[in-house]
Image (cartoon, rainbow, N blue to C red; front, side, top):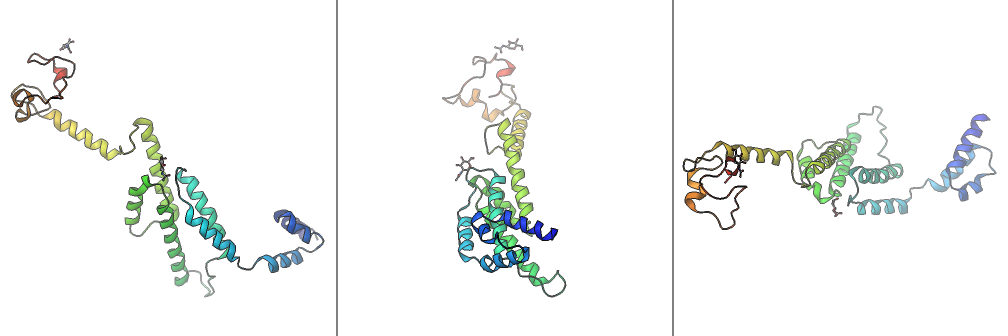
Length: 224
Ligand SMILES: *[C@@H]1O[C@H](CO)[C@@H](O)[C@H](O)[C@H]1NC(C)=O
Ligand SMILES: *[C@@H]1O[C@H](CO)[C@@H](O)[C@H](O)[C@H]1NC(C)=O
């Protein structure tokens, strides 16, 4: 009796008031359950259609990666309820056909998730697709999330979104290369004789750094 009442109260609390009012006079939890099942458990194609439609229109836009993923997941989970993966009846649950269906579905989810990402994630999406085998949905999500976090820290340091660690390395390497050469004509570092403006002529928009033009310039002006 206690179990019956407990479960009955769970059911009545979870369903909408309109539906509950029809079931209020039934005392057996099982009877209420059977009634609800008979009435509502048919495959609800209208709802499935609606969910698929919603799924098609979900994109990240300006949302965070987590917000976008949560939205997708909510729909996928509800779709799962309506259309669960075929139950394995062959006795052992490592049945190949079943796991293949599951894998195909995972792959579809990964594609959907990547396709709906904001355009600024195109490159990481492309990289993930190239990984063989394609990572699971959760792994994909965590990779994109990492990228988002990395960008957030980068924009705190430098406001240019394309500045990646790689670009920074390139710049460093260039600077180093420049600093290592010395001009045999004017004796300053950072350029070679063939490119010395004092021999080839200064470009029209050339600006001297700090000091005035002239051979007696300071070392601080030697970046030409
Ligand atoms: C992608 O994200 C950027 C930055 O958050 C935003 O300005 C842009 O509008 C987004 N693109 C779309 C299609 O929503
Ligand atoms: C030139 O360099 C000397 C030290 O080498 C410094 O004291 C002086 O302020 C510099 N002048 C300019 C214009 O940078």
